[in-house]
Length: 242
Image (cartoon, rainbow, N blue to C red; front, side, top):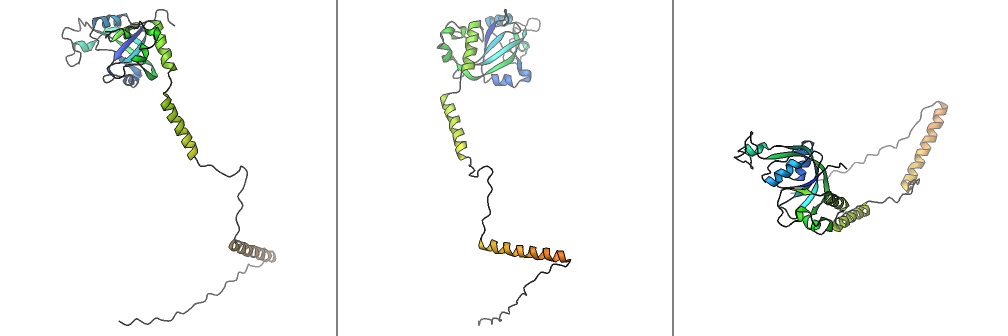
């Protein structure tokens, strides 16, 4: 681990920008604009390339840590501050006096399952975490190395719920039960069932084959007999009286 690496937490409302949005962004990167709190801005100025950041979804139920991002570009002027068409426009900001800054973040990992705030509260190692402090509202917060590693270990150890696992097992059992089973043994061959009609036909074919072989040996042609077709004249029916 890099000795001078720092650890942070950033908050975002998933309706505005979620970790899924970050994952679908080009190179899975974004600029972290819109910060309008001086303390949060100062924290952003302290960020260095390579720092690890916990990604937190706020204003949802339950609020949760959902992944990890990393700083790929250190603080530079936030151009949205002096753009009147932007949501976080600040009329005091100008290109000459930008006031506000932003950094570039890139996705490192999305957790298999979010870690809810209430779960974090129940972990003794996180008792002093800034996120859990009463009245803590900053959108950018500091995180100690121990707190960061505790959250990451918890996320990677978290397994799907028992209900989901039971459902998956039930679906697997059902699919196996519904799969038709073959009663045929390996290497076995099915013998044809001979009926009276098929036996008579077989004998006839055998006689024809013997006769053909005998004629061929004598240089003659094979003669086949045909039964004359009888025609039956039906009496004309008289028309029924009307």
